[in-house]
Length: 73
Picture 1 (cartoon, rainbow, N blue to C red):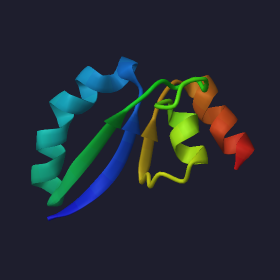
Picture 2: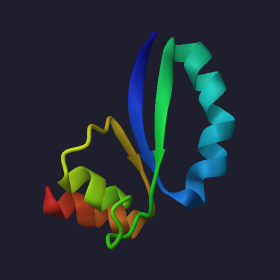
Picture 3: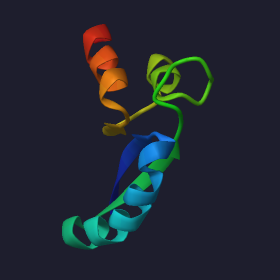
């Protein structure tokens, strides 16, 4: 079964964990879930992970942080 790399902020963790099994069954994909802050400043934050080139198929975070990531390219 193929996997999607998902970067997710803590605020959405409970929802993602709850929905992942249903998604996996419906799509025949698994989720490789990685957690970090939406806001840059720590090595595990979503922006820091992306800057290091960590693979990500999906990023889930706060709207302002995602807008910042889109603007940064």
